[in-house]
Image (cartoon, rainbow, N blue to C red; front, side, top):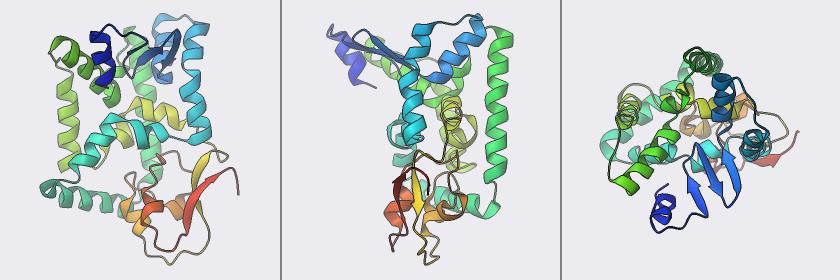
Length: 249
């Protein structure tokens, strides 16, 4: 996020760009939802653009939303904030309420309609607006501006606002409802991908359900497109009931 623009400042351009779209040599990689948005707003299709979105799409298809769980800068920032004592208890209590409220199916439906609504807005306006609602896109763009020009834009206020909401009102609000990148990657959900598998020897301690940032019960909810494959549930399981598995069964 910061290294790439720093390398560019040193006139090293082998890799350049942001999380919206970046180039490694002559090969481009782009966020699939941003390519979809470009098609909708311009009413044109480019094979090269489609190819640039292929790698993220294939990774999501075979390994699930590992981007969201392991690489997203916004996820990383929120995990660090959750470790700060004043915020820790507040965020923990909100996380526990996610499981008790049983909102998994409702969350999936709401995020789908928000995603479709944002695409519709982009199409009607003819303007690529989805990156404004994508925390990793905003953060990486602001990081580039900060390193190259020592400046930030008003878009950083979105990130600050989302953080405020997630600390005090709605745990992982952006990841669960708003982020179009996460919603798009979840569409590649399938039972054959890398996933958390239940071995059938659960002692019903509920540690996995209490720690899940998406409000899932890994044992009951199975292959759910809210899962970000963070592996937190596996790490806290005391009897090895949960493990990584690729494929069905």
